[in-house]
Image 1: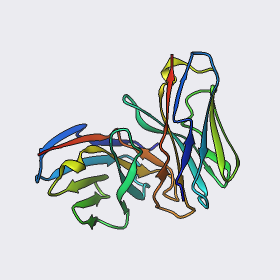
Image 2 (image 1 turned 120 degrees about the vertical axis):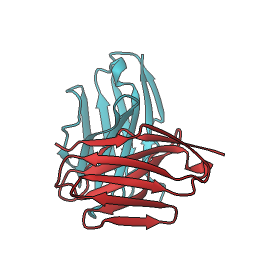
Image 3 (image 1 turned 30 degrees about the vertical axis):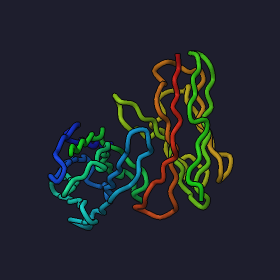
Image 4 (image 1 turned 90 degrees about the vertical axis):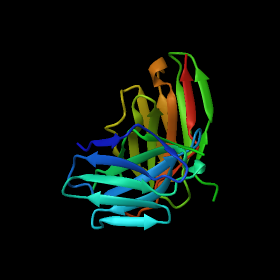
Amino acid sequence: GENVEQHPSTLSVQEGDSAVIKCTYSDSASNYFPWYKQELGKRPQLIIDIRSNVGEKKDQRIAVTLNKTAKHFSLHITETQPEDSAVYFCAASWDQAGTALIFGKGTTLSVSS
Amino acid sequence: DAGVIQSPRHEVTEMGQEVTLRCKPISGHDYLFWYRQTMMRGLELLIYFNNNVPIDDSGMPEDRFSAKMPNASFSTLKIQPSEPRDSAVYFCASSPQVPHTEQYFGPGTRLTVT
């Protein structure tokens, strides 16, 4: 079955720096790759997603890249701010509809001012 | 819409007791998911439903866990008997019948089994 590895598990950056989180997946049939942000004590919320027919997607300060050949995808946050501090989860779909997800273990991002 | 609603928000119970967690998905959403979150294992999908029908329950850890969705607006996750290792935050999420779309999570139920 599908397996998703996420690195690093923790990441500390200074405000204004960039942050990169990387994930790999095992099932070449996966076709949907969302990223969720979870603030302390809160629920996970989608911040960006990418489908397998797209190589890159941007939304203001965040971007996601996908390399289907290598089976890895990455989250890039530029000009980090203290409010970006949270746990970030990558996920990959394992069903045809891109509905059922398997999540990575998460990356705790700390942005210090 | 109020979003996904879960109850209770916190549950403390003794080992061996039955625990029932409840979820009301967003109206009009056809998919409902139950997740368990722990520090060690992260966010794990336990079971999911489409139009009230269980599609995959391979993530349900043991026979002690069961889930039902009697109608489009209500689902339960039951643990009987509960054990200390079941302590976790249990999230319910829902999504519409659209491929590659956002799952909307509820606030979660923090379960502590002593």
